[in-house]
Length: 115
Length: 114
Image 1 (cartoon, each protein chain N blue to C red):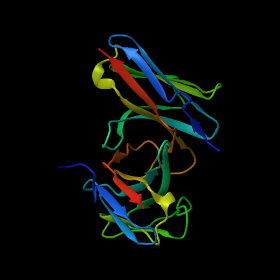
Image 2 (spheres, each protein chain N blue to C red):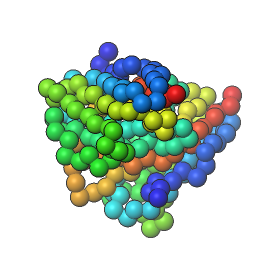
Image 3 (cartoon, rainbow over the protein chains, first blue to last red):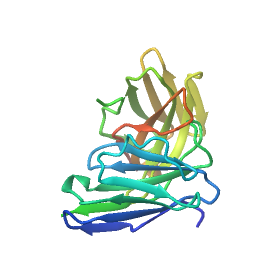
């Protein structure tokens, strides 16, 4: 398919373990965004990439969260020493370019449950 | 502090009637607004957008209205169809940068009954 894909679709982990979430953007899209949606909440912006660089990391909730993007394509979001409050749906989106009038296309999300 | 608010968590409408979903925002720097639709177990899908230089944008059955003085926008769906049943998110973006990260409301769950 030509859409944004994310893996795994579901992840259950124990508190204190590290998890890695993957996003494959639409081919040719230079901008990539990570959001999360906690239960009953809207989508919360985490970080964005323009190419391989992340100019603004201020949306990451704590230093346990990190993200990288290689080759201008795949991105991974890593959560170290997971906590129960990290349980959420993590959504990735990509757009052709950054810019507020660029349509962002979302993947199906990774549902993370921290026990 | 929530900058984008959708005060109605749910809305139920009869098929064929109009659905009106509302959204309020607090940040006067927002100058671009979007509506996304989300089905269960899927990511949000872009529906329609409006720039702050306009007060109305129409696309088929969907129309978005923007009232800047009231910091309010609304999405009208007419006529509503059962397939429109989904969660609708309002989102806003700030001007002055090329970043494009979106600020989302909590969503309104629309149920269209046959």
